[in-house]
Structure formats: C-alpha cells, structure tokens
Length: 183
Image (cartoon, rainbow, N blue to C red):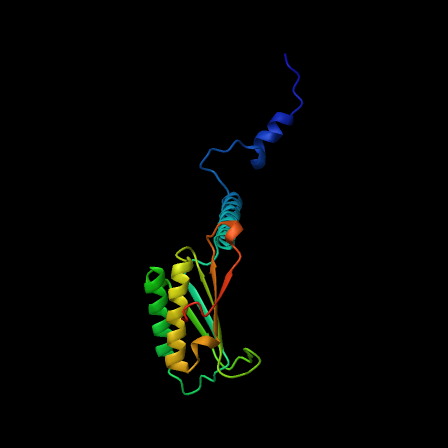
C-alpha cells in the first residue's frame, strides 16, 4: 500500500487548486485580457501614426502650395479675389486639381527690394512634380500679373522661388527666378 500524507485531500478541497473548465474565467482574467488587447491596439495605432509622420516628412507636402509675402498693406484690399485668381492660375498651369492648391498671402511684411521699400513681393511655390523651366516661367508671369493688377506691385519687383519636392536629389536645390517672364 501507498503511504498517504493527506496533502492531496487538502488541495482537492481548496478552490485555487481546483481544476477549472474553459468557461470558468474570472473577471480579473477578462479585465487583464482586455487591458493587454487595448495596450496592443494603442501600440499598433501609435506605430501607424509614426509611420504616417515619417512618410509625410519623407514625401513632403502633398499639394502645390504658393506662399506670397508683400510689403503692401492689405487693409481694404479684396484678398479673396487675389487668392482665388492665384489658386486657379497655379492649378491650371501646373495641371493639378484646384482642390489641392493652397495659397497663403501675407501683407505688411517689412521688405526692401533693390534698396527701396516701394511695393514688392516674394513668393515660394512648392509642388510634388509638375514643375519645370517652362511651367516655372508661366507661373512667374501669371502670379506677377495678378500681383500687379490686384496689389499694384510691378512685375519687376517680384521674386518667385520654386521647389519641386519630387526632384532628383541632385536637382533638389530650389531655383530662384527673377522676372524671367519679362521681355
């Protein structure tokens, strides 16, 4: 016969040592599982957000963006007409939908051009593709015409800098065009 020390009986009578069926899951175990699942979901979402930020930095802006600064005071000026014409012009010349074009206009910016503070403007246009020397000339001429007609800025007192963010790294430096549209 086997020796019996009584340990087996004690374990059989204690609930924590009772074998559980699959359906006998405690509330703590459920809550723990939910916490773990939530932590995993948060990590996954954080990873996706990080990848989106990384991709956005890598790819650059997703739309053509025209940023114009001028020393002209814009009080009393119909800026919505300037913005609308510039937006339409950029979209038509680059060949992208106007819905993707962003135009920013800043006035009363201290600025000297050629040693004088007469009306002048400086612009930067960033786009993913669509820019080349021909397009740049047309954009420069179009924006200069809008600024001359709406803000009385002579075409000869306007710089427009272009940056194609999809250009080959060797060409990635921005080119600065000064009145290429003038004859």
